Length: 394
Ligand SMILES: Cc1ncc(COP(=O)(O)O)c(C=O)c1O
Image 1 (cartoon, rainbow, N blue to C red):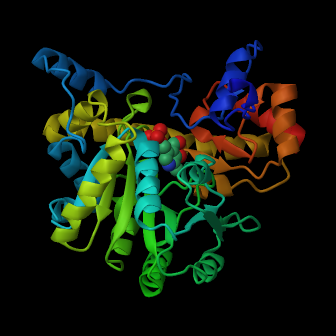
Image 2 (spheres, rainbow, N blue to C red):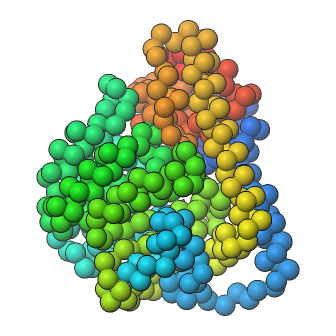
Image 3 (cartoon, protein in one colour):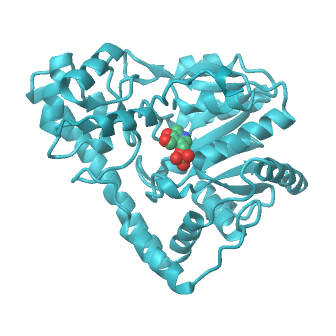
């Protein structure tokens, strides 16, 4: 049987990590996969995570299965971070704990395929490379809507709103809550509001992907657009990931939250979400969610986490500035100041696939084929070599 199976291409992002690991040039620079790096180029375990791990170890908890939808305490904390204290206990909203944000998106995709078989999902152009694959895997047809204005290196709000006029009743529209991957270009408050009104008018359902809360302008600030939007629409999905903001990449911590519009519907929707979970991963992994619950439920640990999150955000923003200055100093004739206006980990550099290939072949600089740079991989030690390499391929 296996003889007939064709081989698949490597993943465009995680495949880069394998190529980087196999490169024996000592000056190599990895700006591919979306992991935070500190000034020494390491992806640290946050101090607050170590402290929470020590507490969990001392408490000596058991390794029994979690409930299918995860623990109620974790679900409530997820809703509190997304919607704020006031809406954390809304009876019309339910949360299931998932393995990372990817798990949340896949549960949403399975739910859509099971219950809205005619729905299509609209993805921004560009979007995270895994988005279309997740929905295609669940047999949900994908369409794209205009999002990024490559001339202005900013949001194409009129183009986006015009494209979303093409949505049909029952379609689903994916929006990035903040720190858009790969462009770093976010919706402004007016566009959030206009998009909410438009989707409500057309009877389309939003799925907001929230993978970088706290990496843009701050924990609350990054949720502001989504909260405005939420006032316009009666129902929505929110996919949460704590991979980046807690640095828990390998612990697979995430959640899918559904605003259903009524307490009765919430119960029914939850019963169906549990079927999706039970038939794909049965019940969620416990360690990462126990850490998040421990940190967010303790005033001191929560304050420590916020301080570390702020540190990560400020380091990235500092590197954006250093990168722009470095490119200028090394003789770039283009204006790269747009890099400082982009939010989160990524920058859409504008480099084309040929230039990306030359960076890799000639300079051992690894970035994603779309020209996406993980700014969190830029450090005071590699920024000069990086700027020299980029300017040489421009
Ligand atoms: C936009 C976006 N959504 C979701 C995810 C998934 O994150 P996780 O690793 O928690 O599955 C990522 C990760 O890179 C992402 O960039």
